[in-house]
Image (cartoon, rainbow over all chains, first blue to last red; front, side, top):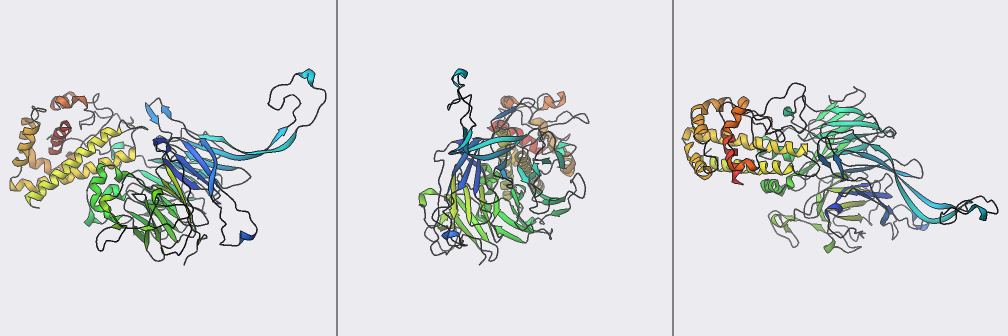
Length: 453
Length: 181
């Protein structure tokens, strides 16, 4: 997706035009094939989009995408409801923190969704046939008067309108004292982990009344608390490895074969602190808000407040690449602290070939970095400036030097328009960006398959 | 560090402390309960601000700038906290150096957000005249009764500190800062 692409056609899908708190999207996730896209919101709802399949045949050559391939609503359901912890007198928010799809094993799709305390497994299945011709019930389901039945028949399945059914299959409750920030499905297809501020639990997908605690960083005396877990993920291929990030900016790789309780990391990834740039807010901006393994499993991508970093699993002394997302905010940290923006947790994602990384920023901007060239581009997810099939324009924040038309000054940035959540299609150059209550889907028509250039 | 920049840093540190405390206070009423990560970050900022405040005070002390910032503080907040003024002031003057030396060990706070009132010891209470701040006092730093071993605190203080015998500067300033809003 180069910034100088000649004529990429962009496909937009805009949804949820009204701005209510409950409609703010809080997580976005493609499934393993990319045909389904799930979003969760603050109101506890999950909306699943399905990609329309073009009529196959002539257009099945690699690189050819037909005119459709748009994502349309497939199903909507209420995943979590507001809850209350009576013992602690605390409300439990219904906001969906994370959604993760399970690898597909049969015709049905399964996803895990979690709020602050409870993880749920949902089964999404289609029904396009229904039985007709019951003996004891009529077509509307009313019980027939037995005296009217004169003969027996066998009910037959007849095609009907497609119905998508979503049913809760498992509820994994009471596993966490603190707020769940991540879930990650293991490559073994049987287990998954859930992480809160101080503990990581491993669950079996079929067992809801027990979980295994694999990391516990709660100090004996809470007054000695210095760091919390901010994100965790299983390795994409090695079912015994997982990584978790901390509020101190460190990453810990753990091997479950080493011991049952993985409090002692196998590898600690830490960058030496730059003492020259210490400020009141050094700790806050070094807190890692998201960590993602590359598809290859060789690299880690982390996001802290001002940068995105790529780490090589083989080197724990520091990141191999550092990308400045919005360095111009470094001098504004005090105001960002006052308006709470400094606590924003941005996510980061890899493209399918691990050659490009993407993360969000403010003013509806999001950034993409090409790892080969090291160059970054700023793009905008904002309806007013775009029409369906319009070219996505690159934007710039003016930080000095020659001012170009369209440059935005740092002080005119809208900090309420933050791009925190996003997802990249696992195989193609399709991205889903959540901007508050709107979902934007962009497709690269020129290079639909991720190719490095 | 010159006296003026030290003072600027001073003012900035106190402002950040004030903002942090109001955030801590506001987070108590947030939906979903106290967020541990956020509270931890707030307490780290407060600790940074407090450390920087102290180190800038230290650099001011030799130049005799000690009394200068004190007077404005006294007059502005005297209607609110009349009584602690002379007491900590004299305390500070006498034990200033002692406090600074043992800063790292002694100079701490308890930001126990939840059990503030019940756990105030009587001796402590007499020094913590809240005045108008009594309407919203829970986030004021105070000496909390120690928990028995094995007892657990859920939403525990995150900037783990204990106030030393010589009431420190920053405590005083926080007491004065809080009634300001």
